[in-house]
Length: 146
Image (cartoon, rainbow, N blue to C red; front, side, top):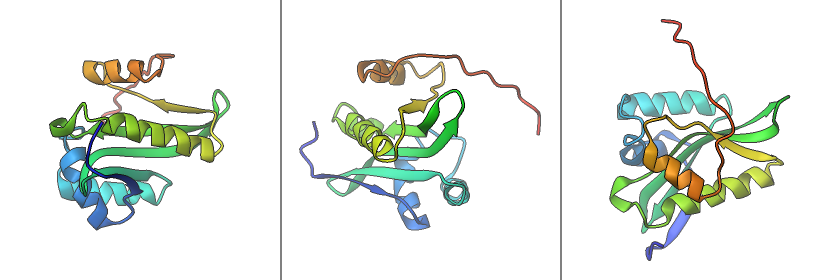
């Protein structure tokens, strides 16, 4: 676990989102900082939340998530983005943020936490399995060329 003081807080404005960009960029390299901030602010207007774990005042992990409800699942938290700074991996930050997300999902009346993970993210899969997440479905997509 990390020895630096840790706090987990929302990123609700452009400055907080931009401060998290060095971590987010490791998961979403197809964006640049300006595109990320603009899209994050649009998504927040639609109910998306950004949460950042800071260790020693430095952003070390990031989660983007939303609350949803479906006939198949009931009320659940869907985690769009979950990333730990590569320079600080194995410091417990990912586990702390995931535990926070699970607790927040419970506080929000959710029956589950769900996420998708690209098939190439082998290390992330190992982490999720260690943290007792289970593979329960395949996600299919069709590129509509739009």
